[in-house]
Length: 139
Image 1 (cartoon, rainbow, N blue to C red):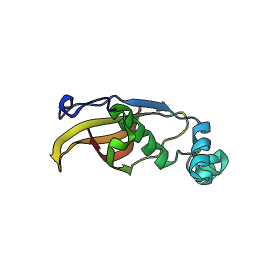
Image 2 (image 1 turned 180 degrees about the horizontal axis):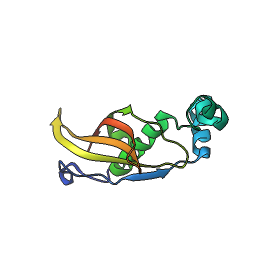
Image 3 (image 1 turned 135 degrees about the vertical axis):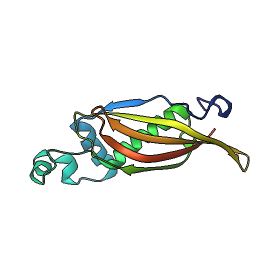
């Protein structure tokens, strides 16, 4: 069941933001879930040695959290029809990331109520983690 309806949504509306503060355990857990144990994500000393200044989060984990922001708003994971982002900058343990979306279009195509959103993620210092994002949900 949708949390919002097509008629309630207007171009320019912002969806509720999701804020997540990363810690190293989240990176280890995502590595286990995804099978991606690249040492830049799980081994602080290795990540420092290769010039990253410590571990960095998996880009897809940030994209997944942005997906959660969208599906929390719509109320139905199946409503998310298209979703793309650019991985702009890495996030690190200790960073608080804000995931956001803004309605940029509403349309009816083949009898389906579609809402297009600009989406992204930023760290509190202004660093853009996910950019050039777009999502389409069916309401």
